[in-house]
Length: 86
Image 1: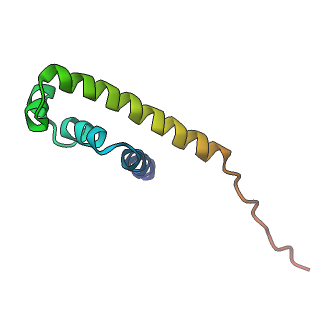
Image 2 (image 1 turned 180 degrees about the vertical axis):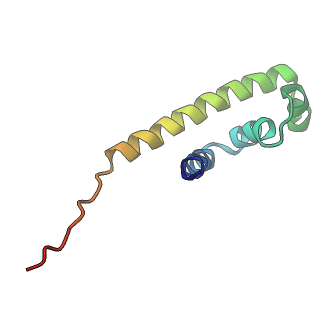
């Protein structure tokens, strides 16, 4: 379960870094569970335009997630100091 929570935090962080329109597009489908044609109506565009927006938003989300992963790999883990009894 901790892994799922960590993954959710990672995705939430990535979503916050996206433009509002990308977030809205992704959330209409993923969170609200709308079919792309219904999400298009909610977004006020054609189904084709929404499909393009969704494709591009998914690509940008993947790129941000890759950036987050790369940043986490570069962060050095501090050494743990253990006290040695004298």
